[in-house]
Length: 334
Image (cartoon, rainbow, N blue to C red; front, side, top):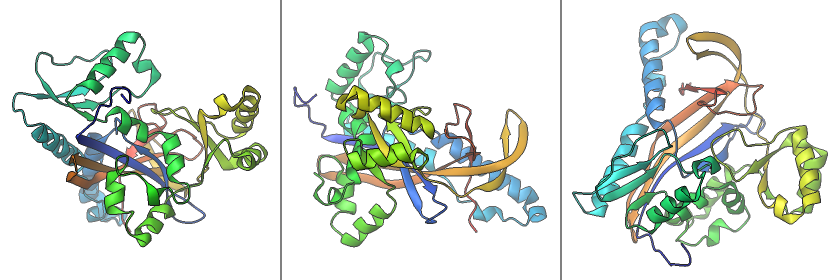
């Protein structure tokens, strides 16, 4: 795309920024920013309604108030963002295209105004050259991509790590994260607030950090440039992988970043899966949905859209709901 100098005048982003409440600092620390296929805006709203309904019926017996479960409008706000992007495309005969995986069917034969990537983030989504050609065709088209390839890459772990470096946010080019520039970067107090939620993030070309991670692997998470869950490395496997990568050289090390391991607050919980519940010690991860739409320099939408709460047993390293590691949950304000 750099070679053909393709400019994206209209950009649409449907994001989810994920956080955990750190037990030591009692601060919400960012886990990652999702810029592609930010899952569960629909189901998270249904779970919130379910929990409010349950508390409406049984809350008095438990001493809980249903009004303390915040309303969740993620699915409506995301739909609104897609509709506004379609409107900016300015062709009433065009459609919105959703990129899905192989077993699903797409509608064809119409001009596409908006392409939403529900898939396309994993290597398995590109099993042959045909899928890469299809992605290139979409990127070269005049459709609004959610996300475009540059926007997609902006959500990688490496970019997250680079943004956490001192002084990077202050000189960030407008083209990469215009909503940060316009909303945060002109105010030093806002920059400090933004940095407060950054966990420790390091490149593996830092020999001092690399040495610390090998000596104390339990304090770090090794993250590759992958999405979809099940890819992070924890515990003694961090040391083993780093020693192996050191032997392979800088190219192998460049694939990963190191992140401070967050130790969230542990709480007792009842978890339900397949109609069966059990009690266990659990931790939660909070995701904040947001939508961003601009046409050239005009910002049309830059809104918080709702939340996702995922809860899992504290002994599990992974947190994917579809993968079977976690369940959907709601916030209860005290």
